[in-house]
Length: 543
Ligand SMILES: [Zn+2]
Ligand SMILES: [Zn+2]
Image (tube, rainbow, N blue to C red):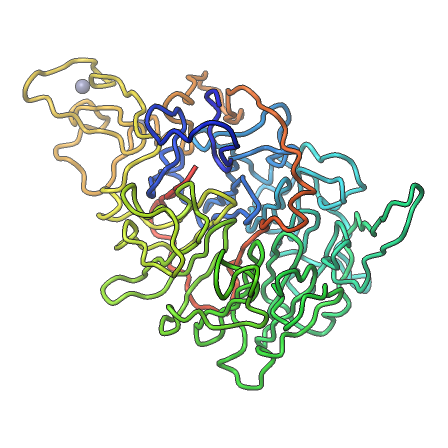
């Protein structure tokens, strides 16, 4: 394993599994605050349920990227991953966009990434063998490149949201129109055809659309949110009608059968006219789809567990209410590779985080080091009690939470646990003996005497405190990743780590292996958008 972080990676075969001790990059079995971004003010976090990489968008519109860099999905060449301890900062300006342009949305497939900016442009990087980056097919797009061609009847369309499967991508525009590109194999492009044909050598081929195509079937519907699993998608319109299309194994589209759907089809259960039972949010999971209706009720279709009702032998063929949380008003839902998440108001707290997943063997649920790793039924997330989680990025084997700083947060362990700070005050390097009680930086643990700061402090500040160096360079790498660099600006942090084997499982995942992406997007009918207050914290668990 070397020193490579296991972010998003499953332990593979061979040998007994060594539990955490002595591993350079142990599974995190409970949420930890991510030091590297602890003083970056994030507004949203993004990944996909087959994604092993993440995009954090901050209030200034920068994207912070980290995780596995399969097929250069993070838009850089020559590294197999970017450590979460040294995330890559990317601004739209660096890609050639205007000075005031911000990133506003993102999506991660297994090995590709989409970024949306405030000018309505979509930028992609990573695997492009099926045109899933919206460019003529090639092994990969190694640096973020703008996707052209979001046009409808001669008018330029302004992208606002993206979702990604393994071999395709979907884009929603401000006018409520939906575009897709990539492989049509399972109908996931929603254009009514797979293009299946026999080619030379008796091989079956399918259509590939490397440029955005307008999904005509949704013409006239004003779509407000899109989501994708590995090979299927769902959308909800402003009325609350839910549409599904693509691969339908395990009845994941909730239509009562397993026939792939080549054009968006309205799900009868959410087609009205009774408003409260229509859709507000859709989430594509690895082998399932979730709909949160307008009264906040959680509905599931497909396979979402390993045994009993809801498993492969007996999937939910139509959308069913999740019994254990049927009295909860769901504010947000997400599906990771082996996890399901819901946020709901709590009696005493603003929000309760609920998680479950039967196959979560690597701490993806983060229920605590002494707790079971997996949970068949929706379970209150005890370590997150009192923490006001307002966004969740559930990846294949890693989960991120976004929450504002709070008293409670200071009890949460930090990642990495140890960062080897200087032993004495950074400013004066003096130890005053017994009474020496310097202030410690929340992010890098560096000690400073109150009187050594400029200006000096007379008392320990309330809440979190960051040292001058960390304030000077928010998002800078921490611990072993914090390579001291010259004070010149403009160069971004990258993982100074060795490389490893490439991951060639892509096609595998298209079959029965559960993987895909779960995303909700910000603009849903569910009314839950706490004010960005101060700095947001990232809580991270699993690998
Ligand atoms: Zn000092
Ligand atoms: Zn610091």
